[in-house]
Amino acid sequence: LILIVIYLNRAYAYFYDFLDQHYLSAPVFETPATQSNLPTIKYIALGDSLTAGVGVSDYKNSYPYLIAQKLSLKNNVELTNLSHTGDTSSDVLTKLPQVLSQKPDLITLFIGVNDIHNLKSQAEFENNYTQIVSTLKISGAKIYLLSIPYLGSEKIVFFPYNLILDLKTKQFNNVIKKVSLDIGAEYIDLNALDKSANFYSSDQFHPGESGYKEWAKAINVN
Image 1 (tube, rainbow, N blue to C red):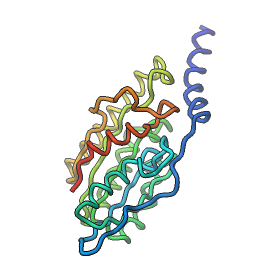
Image 2 (image 1 turned 180 degrees about the vertical axis):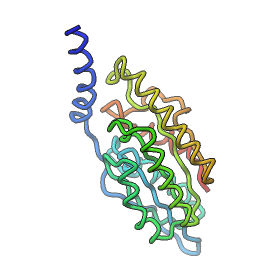
Image 3 (image 1 turned 90 degrees about the vertical axis):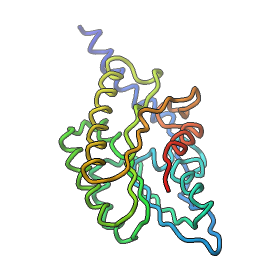
């Protein structure tokens, strides 16, 4: 019994110890260069470290920048990334006045991973998420809701936490899908994507350059 307790404690603690030792952060947010005689799209990205681009050394390899880059082929894009490492759905709620004040044309919302790891209940997440999307709808922007992918390679997520994490991810994604149907926003299922062999960065949790490219390809905005 003692050995089981020690294993469960260390398996959980190791996950965070490993992330601390391999922490990678993208540099300051940037936006694609503008061109003359093109319409302008205001794109706001909301999320946590996954939206901030943690895991790559160059922010231009993060998924918001890659999306903005695709949009910039036919538009001028004003990209505002309001994400922050460690953010939860509660943190996003506090940023909604700032979002509405900027009158965006396009919004991507990618939140929930830290809610899971901070042990927030499904009911609390659903309440927060519903408030967020209901408020964002007021802006009149196109809204894309990104599902929560199962993250963490087998090198850092061990039994039984892999099963618990998988279950919580599915439960929270059911909330996101329900809100997308009830309120009217596009749902993009990142959890259904297969991960390439070199998907992860060195921390084995955040995506690396290849991982973010896979996500950007799947997030088909217009």
